[in-house]
Amino acid sequence: MFDFLKNIGTAEIIIIALIILLIFGGKKLTELARGLGESKKEFKKIKEEVKGVNEDEEPEEKETS
Image (tube, rainbow, N blue to C red; front, side):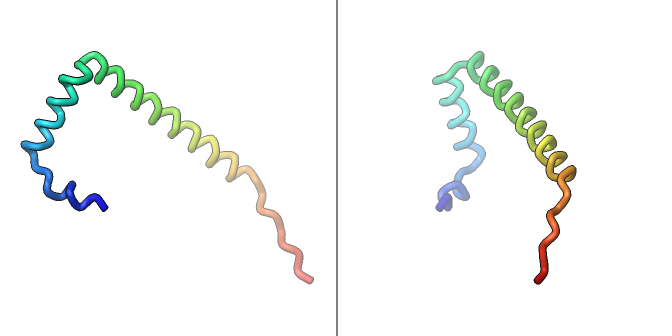
């Protein structure tokens, strides 16, 4: 599906990054990066909480008849 990504080189990535920088500007990109970092931290925190809840629960015993 994403076979075209294999053909992208360093020069193309730099050009794409420059175009994105021109469109959004440096300030918006830093705000976006900060927001992504905070989202990642929150996701990790929630994942650990869910993992802790699952470890606290006791597995139900199956009835054999």
